[in-house]
Each structure stands twice: as structure tokens, then as C-alpha cells.
Image 1 (cartoon, helix red, strand yellow):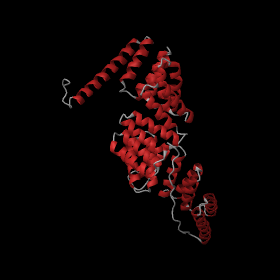
Image 2: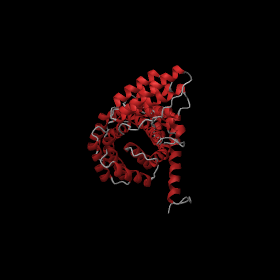
Image 3: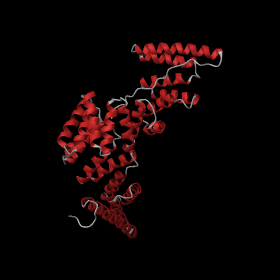
Image 4: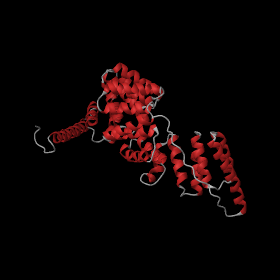
Amino acid sequence: MGPVRLAGVLLTLALVAQNTGAQSDRARAAALASQADARAAAGEPAAALKLLEEAARAAPDWPELKVNLAAARSQAGDYAGAIAAARDALSLDPGLDGARFNLGLALLKSGHPADAASTLAPYASAPAPASVHAALGLAWAQLGRQAEAAPVLRRAVAEGSRVPDVLLALGDACNVTHDTAGAQSALKLLRETSPEAAATALLSGDVADAAQDWAGAARDYRRAAAADPGSARARRALGLIHYKLRDYTTAREELQAAIARDPADVWARYYLALIALESADPAAAVADLEAAAAAAPGRADVWRELGRARLDLDRIPGAVDALNHAVALAPEDASAWFQLGRSLQRSHRTTEAQQAFTRAAELNSRERERLQKKVSGGRGGELP
């Protein structure tokens, strides 16, 4: 996903003062803020920001003015300055929603989705500008909390948001939560409002991928890569399609291109590692998986495959360590328990190995029973 483009929140300034001196300061600040509005309307954001900063110096105890300063700084790309101004406003008036809105927006834009989500979560079902609901949805989506992201993103769209990143995130969340109609609706809006955007091609590819139309998905992801040559996501998605097609040469090239654009792309490193493992190159797999585990220590699948790769290299203690991480994060993962059993067996820890194998067998049996009930309509008994 590219840079988040969401507008800040501006407040109407009212002259309220407790003494003549403060009233005079605010009158001067209000005049400067009015000039800033005129400069902004004339397409001179830098001049508008300079005037707002002068106004804030004239009336440093005016919280609403700091809200507007936060919005202007955010629009100028000075997210640290926007965060500072919004926090100053909240220190003066903790109940000022506009300050909290701008703080959350700036935190998201500066790459801190967890802090943004924490700041904006109270507005998930409360009245707020569409940009605020969009920012909260984007933050939750970036944190992998798609089930929570979907309804708040849907609300932002219903309130009029047509930002491509927002519609793409909504489509993603719908795909993850198996809401095919919702994903197609988000794609329809993207095609209507931003037909040439990379986000449109990405979501089109995701919808095709979900339908197992891999040729169509590859075509769309190539369009996304052409529309946004710097997009790591487009190249990674194209790599995953070729991975599914077992075209490992092209998949490897695309995944490496994704990492060149975003060295922290955990999914790209994970699938590069799977290709290396399936190509009998565990040393290459370990390098990518260790980088992925460092970037995303909460990913159980990364730790599982890292344990498997280390086991293939006879790095037994490291394998045990990685697989213990995997089962701690995903205690229902039968494959991780089985690999842990193998690594413990190689460590001559026979009793612990047997316990891990037993746990793997129990989980596999439970999964077979679940699938059997699903196929037989939940009646249990023999498969038809």
C-alpha cells in the first residue's frame, strides 16, 4: 500500500478570552489564521502553514488553533510536527476531539498503526469525519485485524470516502473475511472513481486470485506494477501467483524485486524461503526466514519454517528454539508440533519428542474429524 492520503481535521476558531491581554493575542492570532485560510485556498500551503505557526506563537494557549496547525503540518508531510501540535492541544483541552482526530491521522501517516489505532479506537462506532473512520480502518488493516477493519472501513466509504487506499483496504478485509460481495463492491467503486490507479489493479488481482483465476490475477498485478513501479506489494503479489503456478524462476525474480523495494516485506521473504526449501536450498531459506522472524516475531508460520530449515542444516538447537516459538504462538499447528518432535528426537530428547508427536497426531485427528463432519453435513459418521 502506498502513502496514506487522508485529510486533516480543521476546527472553526472562536475568540474566547478571560482577560484583555489574552483577547488581544487571540485577535491577532485569529487574523493570522484567517490569512492562512486565504493562502491555503489560493493553493499556497507553505505560506498558510507559516502563518498558522506565527498565530500559534501569538496565542500559545489556544487549543483549537493547535488543531488547525496539526492539520496543516500533516498536510505538509511534517508528521512529527503534527503529532506535537495535536498533543499540545490535548494537553490544553483533553476533551478536544479534533486534536485526537489529527493525532491519530498523523500517527498513521508516520507509520505507527498501533498507536493510531489506540488513539482512534473510541470512534469506531461514534460520530467522526470519514477520514477518521478511514484512518482507524487502515490502522487495523495494517495490524492484520481485518475483521475489525472491515466494518469501520465500510462506514468510511458510506460516509463518502473514495480514497483508493481505503477502498483497497476494504476489499482486502472483505477478501480475508470471505465477503466476496463486499470485495467486488469495493472493486466496483475503485473502477468508477480511480480506474487507472494501482490500487484498482491490485484489488482486481486479489478478487481474481480468490476465484483461482491466476492468469487474470497475474495480468492485473502486472498492471499494478506498471502503474506504481515502486510498489513492493504488486511485485510480491505477482511472485505469489507464479509460486502457485510452480513457476519458481519467475516467482523468485518477482519476490526479490519486492524485497528490493521493501526490505521488511515479510511475506516476500517467507515465500522466497519456501521456494528455497522446495528447491533443496535450506541455507538460502534460513537467511530469509531469520530476516522475516526479526521483522515479524509474532508470525508462527515463519518460526515453523525456520525450524524446518535449520533442521535440514543439522542446526538442531536452533531448530528446537524456532519450533518452540512456533508452537507457543500457534498451539493448534500440527505441522509445527511434528517438526518439533523431529528436532527433539534428533536432540536425543526422546520423551519430549514423543509428547510432541502425540500432540501432532491429536491435532491431525481433530482436523480429519472436522473435515469429515463438514463433508457429511455435520452428521458425523462415515463419509458418503
